[in-house]
Amino acid sequence: MQKRFVVPALVMLMAFFSQPVSAGALWTITPDANIQQQYNDNIFQARNDRRSDWITVIGAGLSLEALGKSQGMAMSYRPSYSMYHKYDEFDTLRHRADLEMWKNIQENLRVSFHNTLDRREQPYDPDDPDLEYEAGFFDEDDVRRSRKPRTINTARARMDYRFGPRDSAYVQYGLRNEWNDNVGEEDSAIHSPSAGVTYWFSRLYGVETAMGYDYGRYDESENRQNWDGRVRLMRNFTRFLDGYIQYRHSHIRYSGDRPGYSVYEPSLGVSYRFSQDGHMRVGLAYNFRDREGRSTDESFVLDADINQTWARKRSSFTLRGNSGYAENFRGTDNEGFTIFYHGSAVYSYALRKDLTWNVSGGYRRNMYKDRDPERRDNIYNLGTGISYMWTRQWSLGLDYDYRNVNSNIKAEEYYENRATLTLNWRPQPKRLN
Image (cartoon, rainbow, N blue to C red; front, side, top):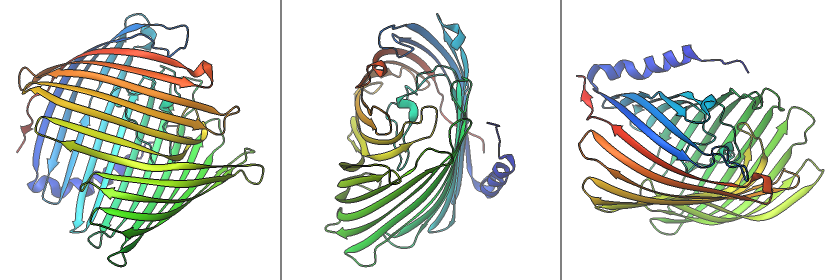
C-alpha cells in the first residue's frame, strides 16, 4: 500500500494550535537516554523449537512541551537501535514519535489532536503488556509472531463539548496506517469517524448514544466496513451509582465474496464512578449474530469495563479490564469476530525514597468465532520489577516478565520469559523562556 502522509493537514493543525501558545506559554525541553540489555528465552514464540537471544537496545530522546492558559502542546521523538547477539538479521532502528495538542476554544468546548508513529520489530510491545481494547476493535498483537519491522501511525482529532454537569457531546475522526517489511504481512489503512452524546433530561434519567463507522483498506484482503452504534438509557440511584439498559448493533460488510454479518446485543447493568477518572461498569448482554441469513450464533456475554487507581502515600494499585465483542481486522492476522475477556492489575510500593518495587498480572481470553475450527486462547502475563534512582537524573531498573499463551489450537501455544536491565538518564525539564 502506498504511503500517504497528510503533511498539509498537519501543518494547518500545528498553526492553529501553536500560534497563540508561543505568546505566553511555558516552554520546557527534556532530553533522555537509555541502555537496555534483555534476555528472551523464546524470541520466535515457538511451542517446541525454542530459540533464545540477548538483545541490546541503545536509545535517546527529546521532549518539548508548551503549556498556556487555554491550550498546550507536547511532542517527543525517541529513536533507538536494537542489536540481536545471535540473530542479527533482526537488528532494527526503532522510532517512536508522539504529538499531542489541545485547545479550549470556549469554556466548555475543547479540541484536541494526537498522533503516534511507532516502528519496531517486536511482535508486541513488552513495555505495554496491558493492551487496550476499544469498542469495535481488537489488537492483533495477541496473534502476531513475526520479528520483521513494521510501522504503525495512529492519528486522532476530537472535539468535546460539555453543556451540563453530566451532559456532553463529542465528534472524533481516527486514522490508522500500518506498513510491514515482511512480505507475508499486508499493509492497511483504517478510517474511523465517530460521535456521541450523553444527556440527562432529569435528575434521575439520562440517555447516552454513540455511533461509529470504520472503513479498512488492505493490500490483499477484502476491504471491510463496520457500522457500530449503541443507545443506553440510564437511571441514577446515588451520587456514584447508575443502572442502565442498553442496545448495541453492529453490521460488517466486505467488498468481495466473503459474507458479512450483523450483531444484535441488548444488555442490562450498573455503572459506578470512583472519581473523575475512575469508573466501573458491569452488565450482562445477550449476543446474537446473523451471518447474512447463512447461519446464526448466540450467547450470553459479560459486558464490563473498569479503570481505577487507588493511591496511597507509598503505594498504588491499578485495576483495569473489559470484556465484550470486537472485530479483529486492524492488522496482520485478521481473525474476524472475537469475544474477549481481559483484566490486569499493577501494584507499586516505595520501599525507600529512591527504591520502588512493582508486581503485575494479567489475563485475557480470546474466542475467535470466525476460525474453523473456532480458536480459543488464554493469555497469562506476570511481571515484577525494581527501580533504583541513585541521583535525580540516573536510575537503574531490573524487570522480569512471563507470558503464556494456552490455546485449543496446539500449534499456537507458547510461553516465554524475559529479563531486562535498563539504565536511564533523564534530567529535570529545562525552561526555554
